[in-house]
Each structure stands twice: as C-alpha cells, then as structure tokens.
Amino acid sequence: MSEALGDVLIFSMVTLAGVVTFYPFFYVLIGSVSPITDLLQGRFLLYPSKLSFSAYAAVLRNDLLPTAYRNTIFITVVGTALSMAVSLMGAYVISRRYLPGRVIMTLYLVFTMLFYGGLIPTFLTVKAVGLLDTIWALILPSCVSVYNTIVLRNFFASIPDSLEESAVLDGARPFVVFTRITLPLSKAAIATISLFYAVSYWNAFFHAVIFINRRDLWPLQLLLRETLISGRMSELFPYVDADNLNPPTQVMELALIVVTIVPILFIYPFLQRYFAKGVLMGSLRE
Image (cartoon, rainbow, N blue to C red; front, side, top):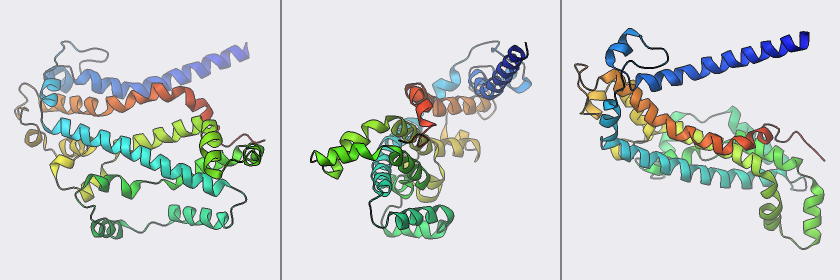
C-alpha cells in the first residue's frame, strides 16, 4: 500500500510540474489567437472565446521576419556544424591517454572557463579581424564551448582502449579510428551536444546587439528583443495599430513569440531517443 501511495504521489508531483511548466507556453499560444478583450481581462484559461489569426497575418507579411529567419537558420545550422566539428576533434585529441601534454591542454581549456577576457577586448578583437557587421560575428566568437568539449572528452575516454588498439594493429591511422570507430559509438553524445549548440545559437541575441548594426543581419531573437523590450513594435511592424485596433500590439507580441520559438521545439522529438543515453555520457567504463 505504501509503495502504491508513493507512486501516486510521484505521478501527481510530476504531473503538476509538467502543467506548471507547459501552461506559460500554452498561454502564449492561446493568447496569440484571442481577442484583445480576453487577453487584457484574463478571461480565458483553456481556450479563447473567439479565434483570430490577424496577428499572425500581420507578423508573417513583414519583410523583417523572413530575413531574420534566414539569418537565424544559417547561424544555427552552420554554427552547430562548425562547433561540433571543432569540439569533436578537440575532445578526441585530449581524451587520448598517450598524448604528451594532454593534461596541460585540458587545464588550459578549463582556465578559459574560469577567466573571461571581457566584453571590450572581445569587441576589439572582432573589429580587428574584420567581423564587425557580418554574419560570422554571430558564429565564430562563440564557436567552441569548453564545457561541451569536456563532456565529449569524458565520453570518448569511456570508450574501451582495446577497440582503438585493435584498429591500429589492423593498420588504421588515428583519423580512421576517429571517424570509423569513435564517432559511430558516440551518436548519443553527438546528438545531445548538437542540440545544446543548436538551441544556444537559436536563442543567442547578445552578440547581435554588440556586433551588428544592419537590420538585414538581425537574427530572430534580436528582432524579438527589439520588439518586446525596446517597445519598437509599431516601428518594426507597420501593420500594428498603436490604438490597440486590428491587430492589437499585445496579441502581436505573443504571435511573434510563438513564431520565434516553435521551429526549435520541433527538433526535440527527433533527438529525444538519444537523451536517455546522452545523460549517461561518460558514466560507463570497460
């Protein structure tokens, strides 16, 4: 009886946590298709009194949104691919026990996690190499995450050395061992870290605020920030009526939030099956 009661309590707590976590997203989604009167008076909980997609129509016909989408997709895809390539190769190198100086290299990477050069040196460096006001300023300065590299390094170190030794005896070079043995055995780690990088690039806006002045290079998150925080909805979206007439500003903001976050949410179901293995990265040894 006590075990059954414990299961009920755990299920109830998990269900409550899920509802509390999910409802803000649901509120934004329902609010984006609700009349302004329902939104201002908080009269809906589960469904709107009347559906209205005028806010989405106004958001989607704006010229800034397709440009921001194109920039964000490019940053996410190219940035994730480049970050994974560098992180995988760097993690594999420092995971080899026979590599001279690997401890020093690992400590050097960890040192960069503890001490940061600062915003001004970073800005001056980006400006000096000619990346200011380019799309690459949103990719290269944050290309490598030391934390993700260390996680991958621990995972590679957990792969039995006997596999590499057998391949070397058969004449395989280090690059062949890396591409033919290590990477195929690391699908869970690669999928998990790739998702971390993709979400990071998709949600990033601070570098765009610092390094980008041209609107044609704005990513989605910067467009969202300028709209919600800076209060420039009427300027950036001329189809908005400042007097809360069709479509109202508040509903437009919610619609823009939905349009911004929904695409990245669709990635999770495709990588969900790797998470169970990914959370155990580096915990199993030979």
